[in-house]
Length: 505
Ligand code: NMX
Ligand code: MLT
Image (cartoon, rainbow, N blue to C red; front, side, top):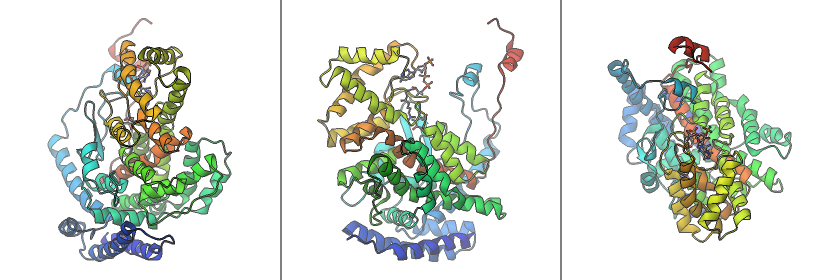
């Protein structure tokens, strides 16, 4: 196995060497970052070829990772998996027969809400406090994860590293990862051909799905499986596919953006930039402010434990050993639903509708009336409510903090703030909404539109690019821990009556 890691590191080093001369002038961060990344990758190669067993490599990694990027991500994942698997075996031995919870008929008939039924390591959602990534809440991560030089928001590469390894990466490790992603970023031509075959008005999420499917024939996981790979190596192939997909997403998504909403000309990648900044750049949005927003946006949307539709769908499909391309597309197609990720586009449309109807200086009474009108027309209030959360989403709160700092006078931001004062009251008054507070989608569009990304139909693609990092990280870990095919039991309504008694309709 160490040979595989070593091969991967050598490949990355070669790719880095060939790409380490971006045509545009590099700023200090980038020049520094590239030089250090190339050195780090070379060192990773040496480290990975050294120890012969997984355990030895894990130990060697543990000593050097603290001070440098000397150990590449794949070797750190190997070491983390080894620890995690030993722990999981011990947990099963000690607690395997313990009861986690009870399942009522209402839970079975109610979208499985409240049923704890899945292992998912990258993040955990608390109904009151919100999401924690490997035990760490968003404010802590905003402080501790590495940032771009001069930037204040975390780099999404950092949270990816954290989710895959459980470790906060050093700056050097994150720069190594940025560089490795840049080295893998070339998108095959077939993707653009597939996009060109679609009508221009195909929804951007449909385009994303098709683009990823066009890349699927390149799956290293699928090929390795067909070539008879041993199951203990599955995670390595899943990791390779995941890295390729994440690396290519900025170019793919930017192409979708520019062909759907701009003149169709593509902006070349700037390999000196970090992943999120390059994403903004390829979309054609080059200000430092947009790059900072993209870093924050891509960090906070990555993961929301395992039960949400996109994570669960990816996890489920992956459990059949469908490759990461097939699995991710399943998840993204779920994200494209209006009760899930598409809610961010719905929010912006609804805010525009609100503004048109009641203007910028609406009173609370006028806004209350408008919210009731939305409900009475049989629609939901987008951006409010949640299947698990019972308080304001901390992802909403951190976007509000960003807005207070960068766009305090934006009329749309003010409208979002005013709605926060009336929507929870109205939803509570309905007597049925379990969580009347805003979720992540209530805020994201307002930040994007402020910086000129006004095309609401594109917003879920941005969510999807970020979510890919989370669900593919877990997919890699799931294969590394040998999770079985997922297959819960379903029952018929007749089965329920036969078990608990016949009822009169
Ligand atoms: N507006 C109107 N009605 C709502 C809302 C809302 N924002 N939230 C919940 N309800 C209704 C829900 O439709 C259900 O009605 P009924 O019994 O008539 O079917 C009732 O309240 C009970 O639902 P809950 O148990 O509170 O919520 P549930 O867990 O079923 O659904 C959501 C969670 C997120 C799907 C729901 O709150 C919703 O539709 N919100 C609006 C869409 C949205 O913002 N989605 C994004 C979620 C975050 N994300 O990115 O995925
Ligand atoms: C998410 O980010 O996936 C959403 O908040 C939905 C969820 O957690 O169910």
